[in-house]
Length: 276
Image (cartoon, rainbow, N blue to C red; front, side, top):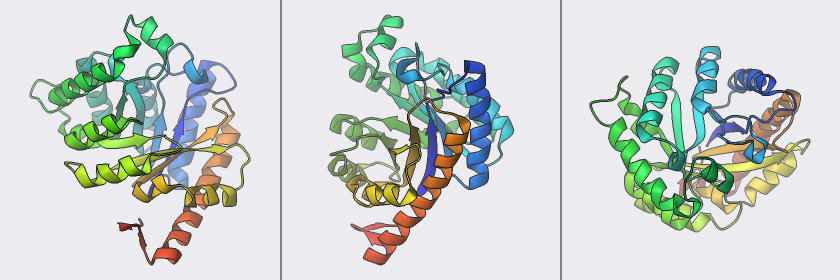
């Protein structure tokens, strides 16, 4: 099971400070051995996040790192032009050496929908349309620069059974942050996906929480049975770089405790899924 870190880019200082610290945090995550580093998109400081343009900040991260996957977590495609998203993602992917994980979703903030003049109640239907248009552009012949590999590195952030089924039908990875009730939908995704199953489960780690408590919570989480990636984030959202760094260390230890316990209890298998 790979390990990722997500930040809402909501530091305690100015936006400039938050962006600078996010680049430093990505460097620290790569040095610590994390597989992926994700930044969340927010408009109008929703969820105290300060980043409306994830591709721009990840371009800076790309120049400061060498290996770690750069996760867009996520672009609200209901508020964007799919060609603009495809072009920005393609440039970032080329710049970073094909390290982009392109996360998309419907968006959950009614205020953001209002800012863009969109009907928030239609976001799920519009997300489906936007994802299909985005996939067609990424796989087409008019995209400059060409980035066909992005189609295999798309992720759909969804908590609904309908959204998970739509992702499975298209062979898109699933990003799930649901704390309860996701396991059955994720099991169905594994059975139905048109491509190699990819499930990233996002979970919170409270600032200062010891690794043994985090590990115990992970072991009791049925959704982790179906996860190929665990993505962790610090709570509260707005915190300093030092606290983020401490969470990196806690997450690494908790993941190792979780995997060790899983192997011991199932001889390398959890509900038929190989422990990675």
